[in-house]
Image (cartoon, rainbow, N blue to C red; front, side, top):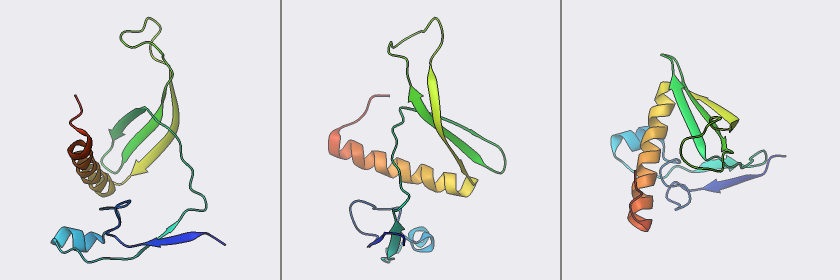
Length: 115
């Protein structure tokens, strides 16, 4: 049986992700309980991301840059791609808004990141 946890939308660990789409778009902040099933959840590290799109989908590739030296490389970079996430354009736009809000909160807490 799958292990599940239930969180309210207002919990600090999952601020905007858990809000119902209609409530968030209309500006109301109704709390919607979300049941997170974490049985098959795995974590991995990525320090590289590449994105491209077609009319129907947005593709995100995640991986690890295995080159130790910074700057120009004679033999090019050694990137090991580990994960590919394919999203609809609508889901990609929601992800973009979520990441923008997350980084705004991050920089408010810890200071601005250089470009």
